[in-house]
Image 1: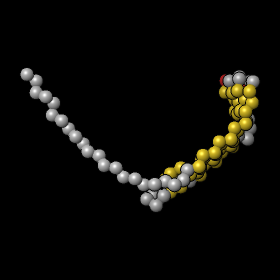
Image 2: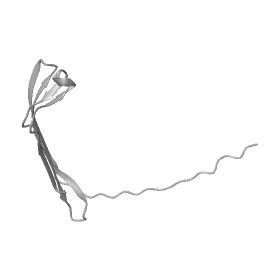
Image 3: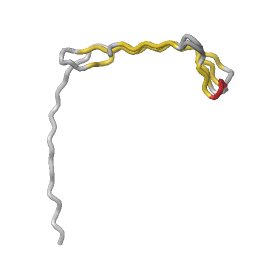
Image 4: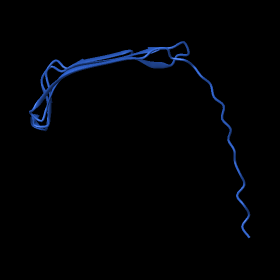
Length: 88
């Protein structure tokens, strides 16, 4: 899957709407890309929503995350095992 996109067709309520509610039309997008080595990596995440919290505060949230400039790196590891001390 390279792209996942969704939209809320109706309001979504948490705790019957007393705790929080997400307004109809809230949407998200998740997109990924494949690099030269064949590894799938995140490319983009978007989230847009109107949220009401505790029946008091209404917020419009828009979050965008973009990922780029992936670089390959290498490391070295050593597996070291020590002999436990002899018991007297």
